[in-house]
Length: 191
Image (tube, rainbow, N blue to C red; front, side, top):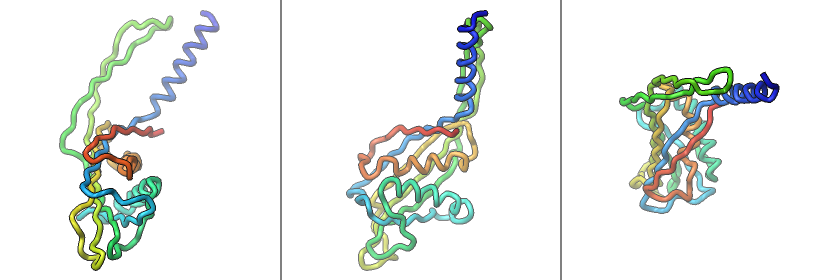
């Protein structure tokens, strides 16, 4: 066996080990709005959706705050008259699917001698953020939603907490330049 062949096999094995340890999180982010999105620098207060307050929201709030700040916004604490606020909801879909994965079987000489097939379950994950601006005279009165952002993702993890940091990044990834109704395909890697 040549040294060159041994190095090629070692390199391929190393690449396989590095890539097999990573998971790709893919999502589709779509923003809908009728009025212009708030300009960068605007303060936005993050709030959990109904029945979503608690320890889980405490864990996710920081992730959404970082995403909002990266998009150029300031994160507020309490809605003031005329303030913008974003209501975050999340959940797993009821539908799941199976994905067939074909992997080549390679012998010691680097030749493909067959194909291995395996199936894995895919689970649907959703995050929705409704953005409102309060009435300039009364912070308790909300106007109609100014925008709605939706991220839909499918993957092998049925635990949304594992992928939430990546979904939170996808929510505001295209703000404030998003086009209303346009779907953006995004991906991130879990090391």
